[in-house]
Length: 291
Image 1 (cartoon, rainbow, N blue to C red):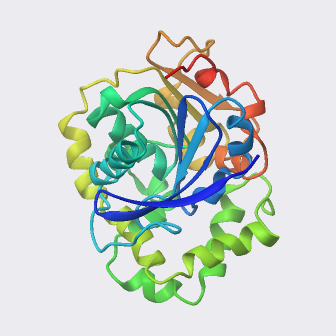
Image 2 (spheres, rainbow, N blue to C red; image 1 turned 120 degrees about the horizontal axis):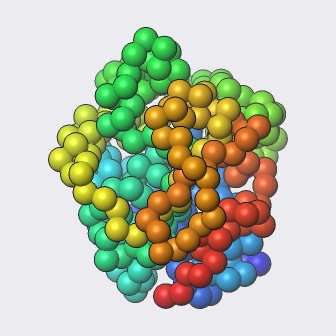
Image 3 (cartoon, rainbow, N blue to C red; image 1 turned 30 degrees about the vertical axis):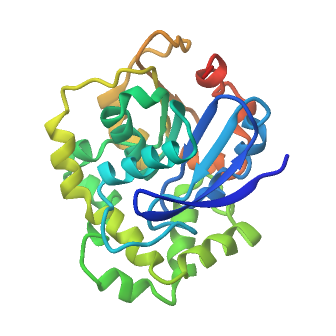
């Protein structure tokens, strides 16, 4: 299966994305500290049935690195304009971590453009802020660290490998899940000029994001939603599972939500980096998707 690497100007920036397959469109949004490379195992499987598009988010990977625009509304607009440039009226949208925050905002701001939504390893930013206490602040230390202007960039630049190694080892069930060529690919991406600054700006937009999230908190997402996380991932399952524990049930495209915690798993990202999730039971949310 050939995976094409493309760039296009949309919403005022150069957007890079991976593309493969034909059929109904499925868009995959990566998280932190990732790029579209994170979906390298899922793209070939999904492309057997769908047209798969995996962008580098604003500031990440090979996408442009402007000085502003890292609030999730602007990043969601990046995707909407990319869709228009590619003549895509509606998509199935999958977001992981930071990409899930963009995907959630997209579903609220552009409901006409999304048929169904999958979010993974994500607690909404407004909930993290609302529930933050000493214990959660220790787990979410990087949320706070990344908010400081300039200082994180000064400490991380030239030490990107140490910085990334910490996250990869701490967030994966197997600390050596990401090594060798995969690790070096991420190190190279985050050593690019402006890459660390842009990743920090993604988090520095939290205040703006929370304001927008609070403004339409009562507005429900209209399309079917599936939420996945690792039950044993301390930043999601362990800290927040009691708040969102609901009965497990089979996915029904006519319903608007499903929650699913994966046992014996830290972050879903750990599985994304190693396995083809499209071969697992997590595929049904896309199974009946027709454009």
